Length: 463
Image: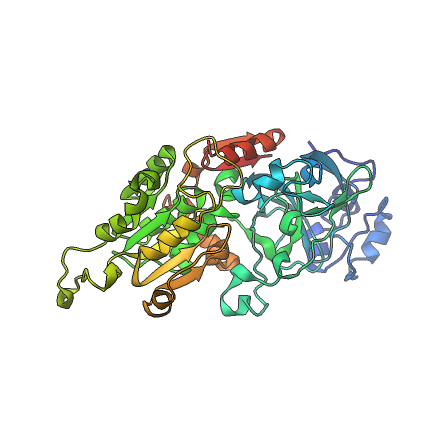
């Protein structure tokens, strides 16, 4: 439970004064929250006033100074700490968190000690977004209202920058990686300013983020299921349904059957792929891959150097007679292979306690994914390998393979995520099957440890 400071409750005072909170919000009115509210006559006089200054809040906002708990990363390590809420900016939203998904890509920040995984000296709330209920909005917010359930995505989609206007919301320029600063949303007990990972920070009882990270979720599906769409689920699903749509009846290969890969497998099934081959070393993940749509699974450790040729043979088609649509086995064999290949294999940040893949840097499966893509086929890279990869320049230049770099699976959150939610509603996308660990907030670090060990497939923290 969040602790409430001693200053008066804004909502109650507004109700006592007879003023409609919704009308205040529509008119852009802002109630001061830095101390006790003025008398009701003073509040009424503010109804036609619109504040545009940073550090203001709507009348539905929790009081400035509210104390909430968050999983905070500092150079000495990450732990649950109390944070005192600062005034929000005019285009920000305050959300009471329901659930957040533990992404493998931040396990070093979650588990590292003595500076390992740290990105500086600042205090940072971790998390690639989450799902929750809106408690307050700044006066410039238009799309989101208090009381809405929203999904906070890992990548923003402002809809107005150069990339968003060209259909690439996945690389929206409001992302901190594009230079947008990380802003302080509170402070620790000792006065240390607190920022959020990617300006989203899902592992806090409150999320304070910009409007362009928020997607309304008009559904009664569980918070755990929806949280999977904040990062990994939408990434894998969007890659093969909206970014590079699977052709009906095609051959699809997915390297890696973690949450991203499993989402791609489900997306390929939804789109009508005739063959879906999953490459995964961990038996439990291969089993779930088949349950969710893979027609065949292969263990890369057992296949060894034969993996690429095996995949090419599996995707060779019923004939090699070219004039009736067959695949010639010549041309170095690259007319045979998958129509679409997705690689969701990332480097090992830490040594897992279960079966490992053949290359902890993930460069080998990335190279194999390119090699088993047929000439003129398509390759989507979603994983995070470590190091540099070399390819034969002639084949890279002339064999027609098309590569798509899939930051957040190429997802335009505003338009794509509502459709993904509908796939859950219709029972077509099984997000729940990928949530193999649901942990209470107090066990956030243990949940990240399970993700690091790969003893779970998908982990979600519930508030």
